[in-house]
Length: 397
Ligand code: GDP
Ligand code: MG
Image 1 (cartoon, helix red, strand yellow):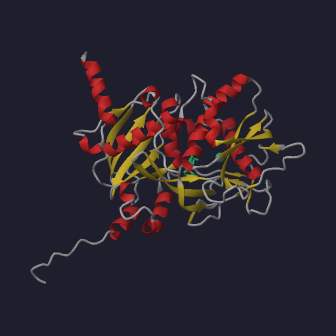
Image 2: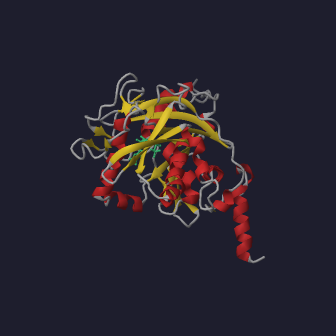
């Protein structure tokens, strides 16, 4: 066996080793799909622990006021004619993307509810806390060929927190975003406005502003393999007519895509877009994604519901398709890798996991700014909370 081969085998073995057996954590994690094609791992049915809302000024509220109600157009008649460009740019109030929120809103929820968490005492100390969107990126990593990512990780009171860092390339792309792409982003939100009502008994009102500061976020508990998870994700709407009113099974995700006319367009859509849609909705337990297909003039004239659990069928027999097992096994492997790497409990210490397509995931270590992301208000409140250590009698007592 040549030395390189031996080294590669040793690294692969490290990746698979459980935490307490490891002398030293692995230095990197490969992302090749072929390495993760085992049976589908255990994934606990996500259950909703609570929710919160962000208002038009992006202020946190511990309630569901921003939740909207699925209200599709009647299925009889000619079908929809939604002008997705209507109101752009004069009735568009986009969120300020320069504001780095990190996990802050989720941490606020956690601070307010830490006393009532199910799972028993100590459950949180063994859990991973993050946004659903970060887990989505992990799920799609083995198939991603365009965009890398960076995830900052800190351990605090046992819990592993994961918070995305915008890569320099992503920042450059965002700042250079073309007018066309900006309008396309607006159109996605505009579609939501055509499909959602503010109250279960009312109808959509497309005359108002599109304000992307407003968000309804569900907070869920799940488990991937032996990794307990607490994460939050933004939910587009709830279906008052869903067979079950229990969240997250009543939630609906809304998406737009280009109208497609050739089999080749559909094939590419199944391979790329449907993977992202599946990963996002599967994680949160959202059973249906409703797609609006827009024509070149920016009108949605047809809708199609994609049940999350049927999405894989579109690529099952495609050699260039994706596989849910690969996505979930890679995510589980990454979470083990992170758990084994971030050993020291210190909210000011950050392990930065970096990935670029074609390379393995690598790690670097940082202290405090600019990477530390657990806010002082959170760390202090959580620290004051701990049962105070028993007082040792001093000579003066
Ligand atoms: P998603 O799955 O990518 O939509 O992300 P999540 O559902 O996990 O959302 C987590 C939080 O991040 C919510 O408060 C969202 O409003 C916010 N968020 C989602 N996408 C973006 C984005 O592209 N930029 C910024 N700054 N925030 C986002
Ligand atoms: Mg959506």
